[in-house]
Image (cartoon, rainbow, N blue to C red; front, side):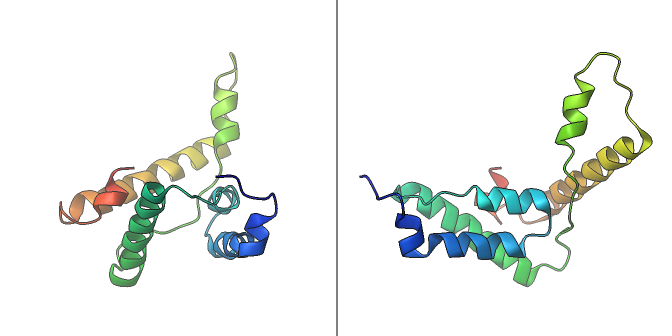
Length: 123
């Protein structure tokens, strides 16, 4: 089915996307929200709603969920692909920070009940 170009504006989806992006902890997450497109596939909508429901439950019930802003390291990773590139100290600090954050997130899901958060664990 085809929708008019301004359909997202008419339905308020643009406003919802902006509100979500404003609540994000980091620039990358806000950019991810800004890139959301309206879905019309029922299976995709159900999957996304299940993920949102799980994340909402985590944020309301779990005080030990590791939430923090994280730095965009894409420029560092791109630069590392260049022969002879020597990372700066700040680059190593950013990489270690991302690795620690990832370790904490994985640890949260590994420590939780194996049946808990099935939709989020798929990622």
